[in-house]
Length: 129
Image 1 (cartoon, rainbow, N blue to C red):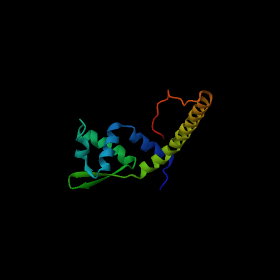
Image 2: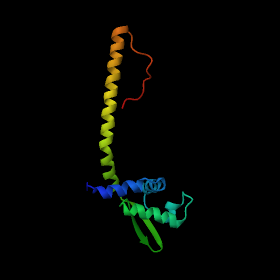
Image 3: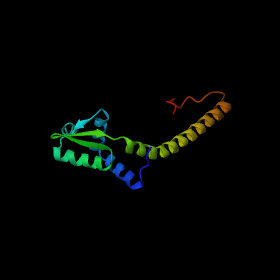
Image 4: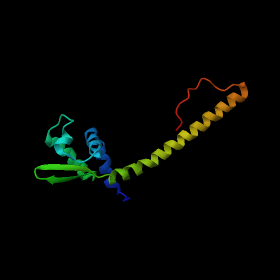
C-alpha cells in the first residue's frame, strides 16, 4: 500500500468531513456513476455536485472520465485504505482500553463471587468485543 504524505491525508479527511461527499463515495462503491446520478439523491444542482466531486478528485478518492457529454466517476479506494490504516492506530488504542475494562470487571465479579458465594446479577450481559 502506498503511504499518503500527511498533507494528502489532511485532504482526504477534509473530503470525508462532508456528509454529501461521504454518501457519494458510498454510491460509487456500488459502481461507476455519472455526475447527474451522484447529484440525484440530494437537492443540489449539478454545479454543486460538481464542486463536491472536485473535492473528492482532489483527495484522490474518485476518478472522473469524460464520455461524450457525460462525466463518469468511479471510486479510487487507495486513499481510503491509508486513512483506515491511520485510524487503525486509534482502534487498537480503544480495544486495548476495553480489554482492560473487561479484565477489571471480571476481577470485580470474581471478588464478589468469592465474598458472597453468588455471581453478580446486577450487570447486564452484552456482546463481547
